[in-house]
Length: 210
Image (tube, rainbow, N blue to C red):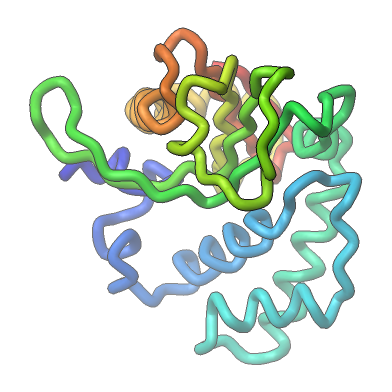
């Protein structure tokens, strides 16, 4: 398997992906992914601090309460970024014709027959406006033939704070972007050209279409 596409962050190791690593960095990433995974639409995201702490606690049970509280406060500070807020918002999208999925695992064979596994952090599906479905109960594969467009949002938890650094770091996500786009296209019944990929660098409040 290729470590670069085994998880959201190409910098994660095989051990991280298989939950064999237990380092401060891997636990920090687990906490952040768990917290961001709770956001459906930013406009509707209003959990209490105890609820967020419970999410971190569940994702990183080995950490103490001081560490848990620090991660929640860090997450809330990051969410103040205006660009990140817009990217996570429904905005002008039609609620009846838009669906958001989070933390979608995938396993697929690439063109050479190599196995790719990983997770799509966030997937926004724009549906046929004439489609009449209960969006709360269907998975992406069940919507095949009814999705008109998909946007993958990759959560990039790199330790950077500037847009220029994010733009440079985005080059290292090429393999991951390719895997996410292919996996989303297969699950939604789309061609790859119908899938957009956007990289989110929360630390820099950077939102980059790639």
